[in-house]
Image 1 (cartoon, one colour):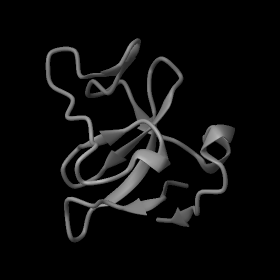
Image 2 (spheres, rainbow, N blue to C red):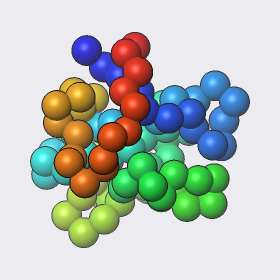
Image 3 (spheres, helix red, strand yellow):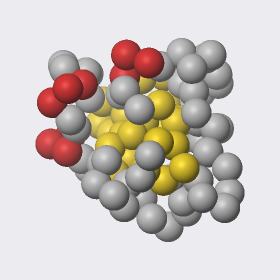
Length: 89
């Protein structure tokens, strides 16, 4: 089941959801504006990463190119994220 973790700070109705990338990394993606964060502690309106084509790179070896990601499941969240609150839906 897909879930979300936080409200997107840049949009009134956007949700931040965990995404599993093709390289196996989990990142956070706003489902309204497509902004990305690498860790829940970094989520703010001023700290997002704005991935751009053609690489859609968000970090070394990590890309959110269309059709290469999928929503992550709760058990796939990195232990380093601590006790982030999971919301179903």
